[in-house]
Length: 388
Image 1 (cartoon, rainbow, N blue to C red):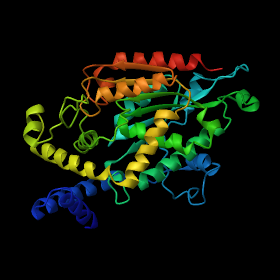
Image 2: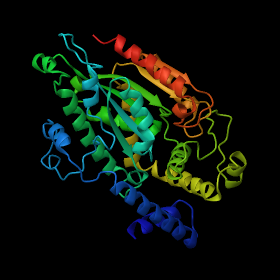
Image 3: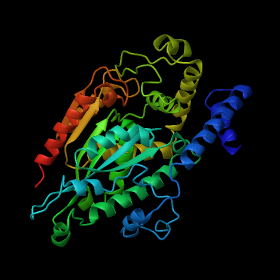
Image 4: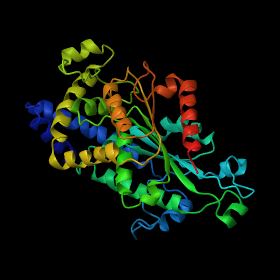
């Protein structure tokens, strides 16, 4: 019941003075925790970890605790989102036979808040069809609202980074000749979703700040429905509400960043702007708006997030970036994304972007499968063209 008490206390502190309302919110949050715990406890089942122990135990950053086979690793197994590339090797899609040096690419998919492995399957298939190995990383909403305010998630990201370091540090050929001659270089390609995946990418880059040799192996990054550098409570509330209610579209009203506009999050206005929302969604969105208005101002939380945004703004690898977004996104304001794109362009980065105009948040592939795939294909051509 500690979580009920904690959330009840926060609910009352940020303006819900009625004890009955606050306790009710706490109990609803407890039910959410129970559901998420049941979901998350099955995300890392007991399984054959030989591949992961082989990769992780040789990491230069690995601790004795991390090397334990009983430790829950963030990498996914072949049945849980991780592809070791065996099918690629057999198909010869990126084999360097004949002495030609060709890089081995691993696509790293960083999911939106509340995404599950099954939600990323189409993206996994998109990259596997192009000869990539694929690694996925997803975040249950519970890990954002834990009592440590995301510290557990930071630890997972650190462990994940260690495994990526080990993966790209290995010289691994796709045939016997490659292994003898060391012709294949391991490279990384990131694909982030929403601001959650984008900020995780920032955390990974921050973890790699002392490993410029590894950062140089990042050859491209796709940002899908993300890159809002502002710590806007309304944006965080809309994204979290969408995750809780498992919606691909917005859980809240469109947020305009124009100076003339005034954001009104009263429940009557919310219902006018989105008549398809349930009463529970409308109420919960208002609660989350108040909640994040409080949380994002906490010095520790604010400093940690600001640090990641600074990394993403000024210290990204010198590789091409592709921004896929939509004017119809009701979670991340498209003006914020376009503003960040302009910032990156002004710093001399190679930037590509595409506005799908009508597709909802993180729903561009489902709305425009052929167009989305074509944009990814063109961007990969750009990334491959600049390889030595």
